[in-house]
Image 1 (tube, rainbow, N blue to C red):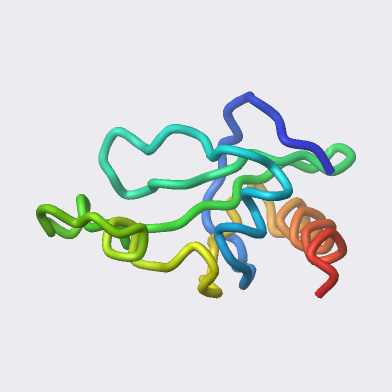
Image 2: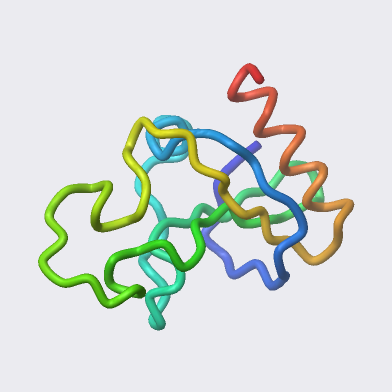
Length: 109
């Protein structure tokens, strides 16, 4: 599995439970936040011919109108080492399954 820097069109197909730090340690800094603040952290990934995106969704303080959030948890709605249900977006359920399976292997889950 590798991280890619190209747009991956798709929609929510599945979820995966892990921490921000697990994803950060595997793939580095996340993509920039979405312009509408619905997504604060995302990684675009490829396994074989399948592409997908792992992302948070509508949990940020900014999206929810909370001002002056200073801690990571208050800013993003989850702690760095707190298990979070990340969305997996892809063009097809099959692509999402490939991405999820590869991620689970990397995470030893």
